Image: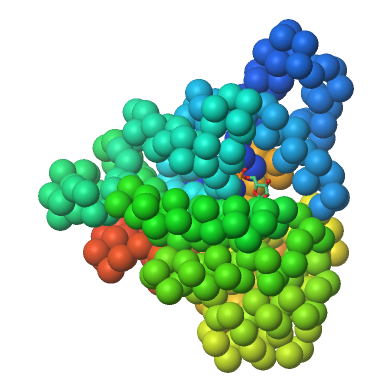
Length: 362
Ligand code: 6MZ
């Protein structure tokens, strides 16, 4: 495990509200319990439970959102989540979150995202490189030390954002999120994710917003095939997103299409097994895709909710699929090619990995 922690890693599928520390959730729940908003003893065991069906996961998210959706807390969890990823040597993080509106506390989707940005700026334990356009990226790169897990220098992490459309949302709400993403491009927003309870909503509801996003140059990643929904899977693949997440319930034609379009897959092993989207690691599609050299990237999905970390996902993959250090290193490095950030960032990341290759004698 120690080696997996020291390995530089790229995280491309992490939901902000799914990545919160249990300790923070419990603290927030305790405070709301004292205020009489919730009954602490009712939610404590829900937060600490380890096995969750997909239905239970989405119930938990509703609870998490009650605990976290105010500006101060959004700022806090963003800061903590980034610090947690950086502490395990994630060198590039594409963090996704659903901008939320809550009229009762004067929260708009924009003010939610401003709180996220404040959290990003508040990170103090590591250097965060986040703004691609409004600072001179060249000088920023030079001013930050190259992250090298072993040499004791301050770590640095590139953070980029994806805005998620929740499947419960209407076309208009989805469009509002896309427009917000476009306005926030200078702050490191690179694209749009479609997520939320996969048994809710219709593809056609989000399609106009996703098309609009694409026309305006945003990257798209879709949660695809988390439940058996053959028509939707085909429609999503025909859209040719830049990446898909999960791909658990694909049939032969879906695999053909995915491979034909060479769409990278964000693989979330622990999440898939815990939610029983895949019955066990022995039958996980990781093996087939890996052997076929299809583009894949290991991701956490919801490190808090599924009690995992990216280092742990590499460890799980190594033991389930017999990967050695060299293979894990190559798998981690390959992820650079599937990030949504520009070539300058990719070059920097390649340098970080090359430096690590020498250190780790690979
Ligand atoms: C689908 C998921 C998910 O956006 O509030 N989310 N959507 N499948 C999953 N696999 C288990 N895990 C998380 O983060 C939490 C939200 O991300 C989506 C859900 O919409 C959840 O409410 P944010 O930061």
